[in-house]
Figure 1: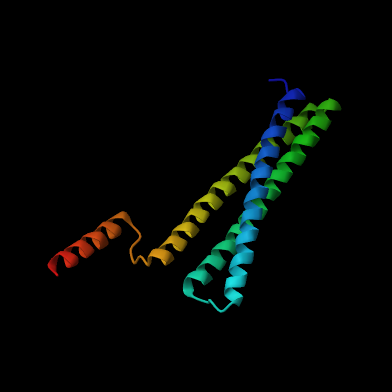
Figure 2: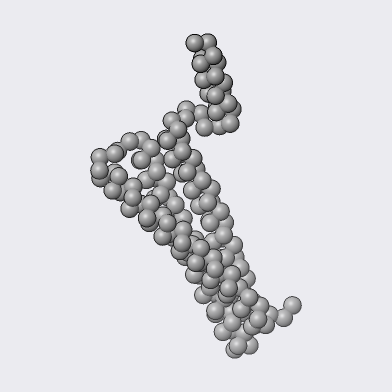
Length: 153
């Protein structure tokens, strides 16, 4: 297959949109960090808050790496187009392959970050509901226990 300048150009909108999504995730996380910092400094230093802070630190590192691999992918794509222009096809093909690999790494890290953010939301909900067992079985058991004890009285 011949690598033309149009092929790496197709990645530009995809990489740009994913970088915009990463930036939005970062901004939302920055707002949450500031909120938790003020809560922590206000004297609320419970266990759940500490777990949330640890979670946020890890997620911030993941977002930094997602953005870094996205930028590297974008740069490889640009250099690929430059080498196609110079008719150095071997270098262009290598850079295009690297661009795809870096883009995939960025997406995998994004998937991991999404999984961790879901766990953070579950942690927040469990602290609000004071669940001992947040699984479906635990919720059903708790519901039946409440119904059973209220029916006896």
